[in-house]
Each structure stands twice: as structure tokens, then as C-alpha cells.
Amino acid sequence: MFRGLQMLILATMPVATVAQGQTAKAPAHHLFVWTGDPAKTGNNFVVVVDADPVSPTYGKLVTSVATDQKSAKPHHTEYEMPASGMLFANDHDANRTMILDLRNPQKPRQAGSFKSLGGYSMPHSFARLPNGNVLATFQYTDHGGHMAMGAKTGGLVEIDDNGKMVRSASNADPAFADEGLLPYGLAVLPKIDRVIVTNSPMGDNFLLTSNTYQMFRLSDLKLLGTHRLDPGPRLNGHISPEEPRIGPDGAAYVHTLSCGVQRVTGMEGPAPKAKLVHQYPGSWCGVPTIVGRYMVQSVPDIHGFIVLDISDGDRPVEVSRLVINDKYSPHWTGWDSKSRRLVVTSGQSGDRMYLLKLDENSGALTIDEAFRGEDGKPGFIFAKRAWPHGWTGEGQPHGAVFSR
Image (cartoon, rainbow, N blue to C red; front, side, top):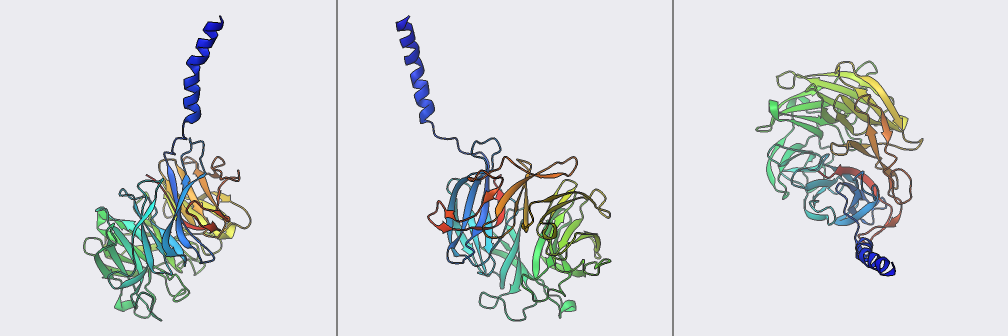
């Protein structure tokens, strides 16, 4: 009996030893967060977070890597991870965009960068083209790497993954010579050979007169026309249009800084039309996301998010609200088709980043309680810590993008 027991113990020992010596399995899904130092003494960096819901370290920090850009105003990244794994992320006030190689989430790196291109400066938003290149909005004509006092126009630039310009086009329109035509957001519509671009200043210049969108032909970047938005019953629903999103009906839904929702139709023809179809409370509304028939909007006035059902594009219906807390100022939203979750950031230093669940039947929005940082609370916090790349400080997150 003793010999049998001894053999049983010996037989099981190698298995136990292997189990104890195993390293944790790497997460299968990641979240990359473009982060800066609010004190502007450190450099912008990329934070990698475990975004695999079945991982035992879901919501925990994986790694971080610094870029060579000192923080000025880390701002927009692309909204979705491109197939190449080379993500564009800009520091707006530095007039510099980093190209991040995120193909190995355990070892992200800065692969390159660019500043002004094609005679234009201060890029804002990025959209991938069918050929894999990026089309970017540049707010201003270039004047030595910065905006000129009183600059009124900018342009579009197509860029490859090496940061090289492919082509560019001005958005100047003599019919709107006295207004600020400062390209902000864009959406690409390959099926109708169009690009819709909104004009909205990053600063206060031209804030009240910036109420236009423009249509370009995608194939040659020819400007086809500049058009005004609909002010609506409150007479301010058109001020500073920002990010356009294409809905399930093919229309462009453009949120404005005055929290309006403009629905743009007829984009394939010579006379597109914008109609104010909804207006959220307050102002300074941030980045929207469309998932199926739902439009999720960050609304600072309620310290959270509002979901619209846009099945009837002319008459959107509010279906849910989610308030984070009485101090949260939401800004960024980004959808992950793999985990069926939204990432949201406030852009405020030291704040938490949350993942949200969207009920795709009802439109209800809830915080993913399983996504918890090292402090054990829902969300990932960017408070002061020693980051893996060797810097200690508080992070200020902005753009956040899921791996493919």
C-alpha cells in the first residue's frame, strides 16, 4: 500500500511542478490608450490594457511605452485599429503625429512620425481609405509648422504608413472667404466616391461662424461644395460641427459642439442637405459612436452618455442614459466589434477609463463591472503611478483603440 501511495505521489509531482512554473497566458485582446503628462514635463506614451473578458487579468495594465514627443496636447488617434497595426496618434499643439507599431501588444513601439505635410499643419482626425492609407484633416495652411494668425483654411492629406504624403488638397472656398473653414472631422464614403469633412476650430477662433461641412470627391480630392448646417429651433444646433459618423441608412450623422445632431443626406449629388434631428442638453458634446441602429453620444451636461435609436433618421428617439458620476466629463467613445464593448475616456488627467456594455436589442448602456484596474474598482485609473516605461506621474488619456 505504501509503495502504491509513493508511486502515486511521484506520478503527480511533475504535473504540479509544471503548473507552478507556468507563466500566465498572454491576453488575446488589448486596448491601446494614447496618454500624456498633464504637467507637460514628461512624454506622451501608449498604455496597453488587457481587454480580453475571459482573461484573469482583464482590466489590468499590460505594459506602456514612451514616445519621443513631450506632452503638449495629446489628442486624436484613429478610431479603429487598422489592418496594418500601424496606428496614427497626434499631439495637436505640437503639430506632430506619431506612427505607432502595435502589431506586438507586448512590445509596442514608435515607428515614425510626421509634422506638417503638403503645405498644411495641425492634423486633427484620421480615416482609413480602401487602399490602406490614411486621409487626415489638417486645420491650417502651414506657416513654419504652426498656424498663422488669422488663418482661415486648411486641407486634406493622404498619408501612407511610413508618414509620407501621397496627395493633398486645399479646402479653401472663395464663396466663404470671411469664415473659418478649419477641417476637423471626416468620414469616407467609397461607394459614392465622396468624403464629408466638417469645419470646426480647435481654438476659439471662428467658433461662432464655423458651421459648415464640405463634400470632396474621394477619387481626386476635388472640393465639390461647402454647405451650411441647420441651426434648429434653439438657433445654435449648427455651431462647430465635429465628428461625422455614417448611419445604417447611409446618411452622415454629425454632432456639433452645441450638442446638435445633424443628419446629412443627398451626399452623392450636387445639393446635399443637413437637418438638425436632435439636440442633447448642454454643450461641448464629445465623440459619438454608431453601433447598428444606436448612436452613443458623450454628453458632459449629464456627466455621462445618451443613446439614440436612429432607425428613423429624421426622428431619433432617446432610449437610454448612463451617468458615470457627478464630476465625470465624458469625451471619447470607441466601439469594439470583437468584445461588443465601448471604451470611453474623459480626457481629464487622472480620470478613469471605462468599458461599457451596450444592449444591442434595447439600447441600454451599462458599465462593465468586470473591467477593473489594480485598485479593484470598475474602470482603469490613470492616477500617479510608476509606469512600466520608467516614468512616474499621472496620465491624461485621450484616444483609445482596441486591437483587432
